[in-house]
Image 1 (tube, one colour):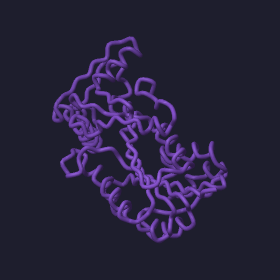
Image 2: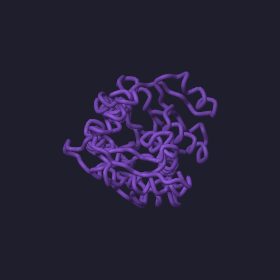
Image 3: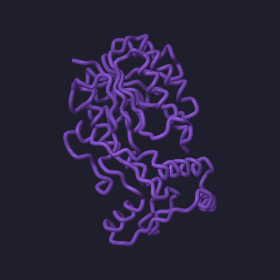
Length: 284
């Protein structure tokens, strides 16, 4: 029986992956790596082993990674420190002789620093390269944008306001749900034949916000319009609502990336792994 270590296990994705694994293998074969032990009490109660470690603490990683056949490596949420932390994880996995590393990378069009989200995305392709050069057996999971972020982008009251107001132009995105990503990860972690492969985990079709406005209109019985302002007008509008500058910047850059087609990667990889159709944006 393979031993599996899941990092970032108290986050949304990590928790979902552990819950999916628990439907497939005995809890005794699953361990989780967390920074804050008290946050993992619910997972511990399910019978998984909880280990403490921090991406910024190399020695803690080497100690935690010892003896594992498979490491599910959830990318860091600390954007500024992400690449340095990822270097620690890959190097520690190599030193600890981890059997197989699975990395939650990201779909992207640009790898030359020209993407509006280069600060976020560049660490992913650089980590992919680190892993491929490490000599470790790997599987790189290039996640598309989660359907789960749509309510955050559009606003909780989009049906009441009747308008999606985002500077995403005509750009299309191959959205997929976080739960489907987790289900796919659990399948990959508990089956063989994924050595040194890269999977594009996006939706089967790509959708624009025009498409999403149409879906919302059908589902709600109200007319929902999509308006794509300039990034400047969008920022001014959000500022007038008291939205923090950091949040405005984050939303703007992702929307501009969508407009440039940075996340337009329809793929059947997710469907093939799941053995069923992924959850559509409309169903989500």
